[in-house]
Length: 213
Image (cartoon, rainbow, N blue to C red):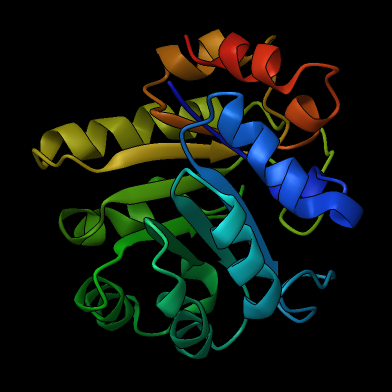
């Protein structure tokens, strides 16, 4: 299991130190939540701050867009060379076009599904994706309670990926901790995003290691 701590739960007063700490602690990716105050009722960070995160990070960035006008935000963040950029299928009218744009920029494209969106909604995009991010909370705020139906959705998504003989990865974001990590692994999840669980632990390294099962 790969672990991508979300910096949304970090202390932004010492953000560079917080990013370095999770990288030194053995994380696999650094998860960056970009919210525009329109698609979700919260506003987070732009490319100036994420540029500083990229400089502090020794692990690849995993940028999760929770925005309207996805293409505009892809252009803003692509110069930072993240490993992944994910966008919400619920907001995108031309997902295949945007997937190709992200890939043409040298970045791995990913699609995010809200808790109510069935995996079948993106079956015919799977072949073009490197990752699907399943939300296990409603997007917008950190520290929310895990929604258990993500396990069933992960099973169904894994079946679709296997049927299409795809190498697409499954990521889950929201309420992940050491109590549900085994169930997520059993459901076929490859990457977990953990914010408050990691940053709320006295030892970031121990928290990350407990999820890398």
